[in-house]
Length: 384
Image 1 (tube, rainbow, N blue to C red):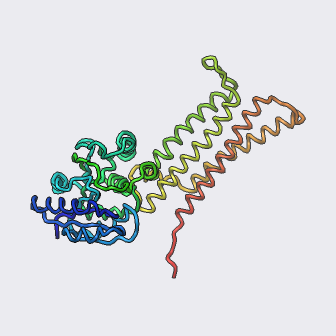
Image 2 (image 1 turned 30 degrees about the vertical axis):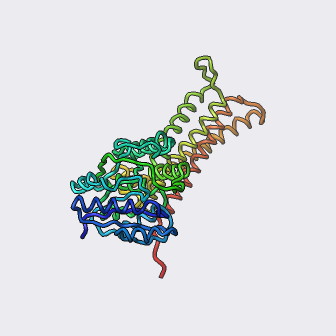
């Protein structure tokens, strides 16, 4: 078995593929590492395949389009124990891969390049990506998943082939770079980092990367894989604010620093309770779904919490809340009837009415969420 596969996804890289292959093969020869150069071709129509083969690379055809699809196909075709992947546009230096190999040999599951530590040449990265996109997304990756990497989306990275294949990566677009790191972090893989350089690519055509579109796809992936930050924490904050608002304003108006908070703020607080509760139920259902699909590994603490939130318990809470709300509504009708269905403490009764309606809506919302969670628990059988 070879020790290393240097893998390059390729789509119409005839201008640069030869230089990349030559540098990679030169590294193997100079370092004494047994390996191969593998091109995962994504349907090139400019002769990139023939050029790569002429310079000593092996070409694996990957019909499904997309950066992630090309890499998934290339990883499956790799013959090396370790894989170092990098773009075939001559922006990464394939002659300087020994730091990646050394970290992999030392037991790292994934070794990330860090372009901000190694050096970014003038014109190699658009200002939007350099000062906003990559730092922002890298910060979110560290915050959401605890990934100790300063350059979350560096395209030059090495990994243990079998360990990465065990992650069952699925995304086919540019967000594949995020998925690899996120899934590895969730699986408690060892992720190391080494400085690397980035040079302007050698192509005369525009790059495949689209900053806004691909940046959004990365951000969307990070949020979807973190129900806590997408749903739970915002939901808890909104719910807490709503509960404080209703508790403070239920007796009557409150003056703070010369500003009067009255019925309108009370109604907004009621809406906040509904929004916060819905966001929290979304967090529970999303985490449950992700665990069932194998998208995230089981969590001891979170798993125990989820196992305690059964459909029946949710329905009991929904019933209690809904019944309290109905009781409040009936009380409002009784007061209204006692006043011959005329005006009767408009401000006070409207507060009671709004809070009671909120309790009924919250109960219904929680009941629907309970049944949705129950649908996810229904076992399925393969058709005969």
